[in-house]
Image (tube, rainbow, N blue to C red; front, side, top):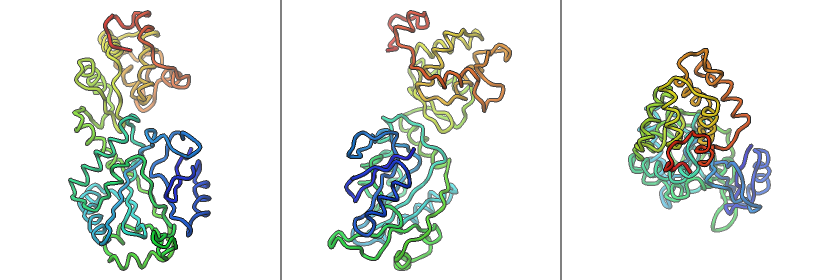
Length: 356
């Protein structure tokens, strides 16, 4: 489902589909500047189209390069970033001339970034601030950093409207290839902007995604790896039970660690090589509510059950496929166990456990 804001630039409408967004553009293009939210959102809050920004789907990083008097400085910054960051990592960004005083750039992730809603706004701010400082991007607009998940961006192939006259300037916001940005002069680039152009092909990058999550993990002192092996997950769970980490990073996901009593339950069951149905339900409900991938939940059960014949469907012999019991629980998703329930069923044995 497609949820975006549309602005002129004030946010005036919502778009649930790409077709609806095109309708808004058709209505206002050439009359008002056309903008849309950089990210789409899981849900909209009210009729005024104000999005629940914390639910933004972080499927890439957006950069806005602006300079009030010398657009060429923006071009030089983008070229430097492409040479020093994108090219060594084989990342192909999407590039746009805004038609006004700068450029826009998108680096697209292979999959949406799996971090909690509360981390998204600050996480983007911190990472963009880091890139601006690391690569000395003087024209990277501070407003795009500050607004983070709530940013609006100019829509490609729409006309630039003069702020002074309210009339079209004759220049369009256009897509550009990496080769054009790296080789053409600023005058030649503006010469291309007299009409719309074909939109670029999106090339998604798992490396850019990993760079961002690695930076955030390092900054927060969180242990992380690109492996989702069961032994790694259990090692991190043990560390969590000692209070040393609050999150667990596996592949492209950043997980919130389970509650202390659930971690101890898992570790104890690994030690004895067995578990029962009630314990398993509590474990699965906990991990599902923490947005763990089904295969990572299965990886934990692979270590709980020593004998494959005794796993009762909690994991699959193929580690890329979740166990049928995990899939079944996911289809009938339930809330994690309350503290009272854990204690009543003797799953939490510590009367002072902070498992609320």
